[in-house]
Image (cartoon, rainbow, N blue to C red; front, side, top):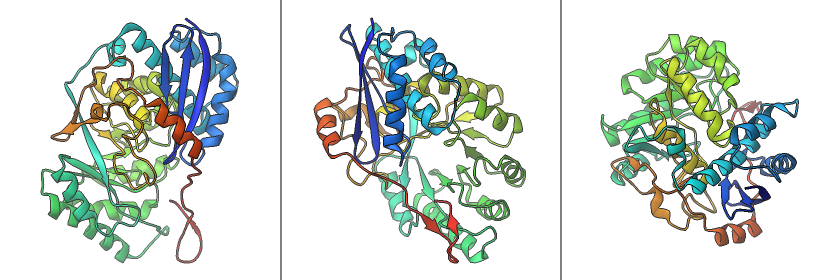
Length: 382
């Protein structure tokens, strides 16, 4: 079996899909995307195609190593995301070839269902309590929220009061048995993060995500020493080498590699195994499309230290398309009691509605995140 073609589809709301075709009639799908950099990532996939055409798609590890090591420059969001989408597609082909889900080729399932969470509120949420209540009513047992907007290095305590009040409103609306994860998107700086964590502890958050930027590992260690709330990070780390120091530092309880950024299924499985040796849980990052989520579920199914899975259904980013729009059978992601059943279909376990993808690609998108500034005009983290 040989790879004969690759095709890329830039589709709303902000995604990039990849189809890899073979001469044996099998095709695989991947989602190689860096949000806000779709065309750049597509160019990286196209550059990689000369290492793919004519190759046996079942030689997944060799292709991964070739794309990573044989091109001298390596790592980073663009190249690793391009590799991630390719890797997903190759595993999809291999699973279809053998007629089994990918997780069966990675050791088999370790669980029967996969707990998931949804998003509530946007970057400046004013109605998160009602949104959380709706999530709970539709069967979710956990949700994640943005609790802070632009913040200075040292900000007023009023900002902290607003964050605590917002989280408290969600706790009041959902009760003690509903888990609340709080994503700070790296918007907070070390001193403020320590104060915020202390004030949030009585509300028992599920975890605090990216309280500071991932490059500030020393600050992350200090924050972790000052709170009992589990710390999560990892969406902006792209390989096992990036995660190596983070795990050695002992500052996080949960890692969040993204299956469309961190080298794909092959690499995230290795990252998850590394984390297990440090007694750290896995919660894959996935505010993306159906192919990325399907890849996550394959890892979730066969990874013992998996904690919970992010999904993008009805997330605030999805303005002109949503998670189920490109699936032939949307029920594959049906959930109840806060969980999705382990997928049973071959490969990624989904069937892409290719006609819908091709039509949507004619529309395309030019998504980019907003540019934020603080009250004095200084550029701020989004």
